[in-house]
Image (cartoon, rainbow, N blue to C red):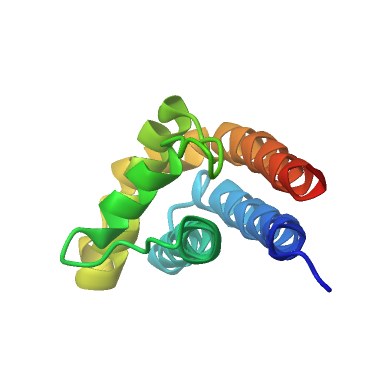
Length: 159
């Protein structure tokens, strides 16, 4: 019989690899934007930033649904989901991410909302620059924290 926590840990690792590819792609495109600003390249970076957070949210939804058995709903469910991942659930699981990382990820969550709700020509390149400057460090911290979380899920399965 398969252990659900092990399956979730495997999915987290798989999704982290995909998130790393999206982040790397965004960085490659951003390198092209810096010397020669091009609206189409800025749009491509924005789309990859959107994909980065959307992919991360898939992981969080999986944990909330299958581990916590409590998926947030309502108009601010995206914010609530992020906050839920930074909370320890005693007897269920440790925090999936630190409060520090939650705060950093909240900017990407907010940007994902902007990308979904405005025309691309209204995107703020300065905001994109801030997110892109921080993306490599955020992706590395995310990888470390969620890999540790996946290991904890596997450990819970063995106990």
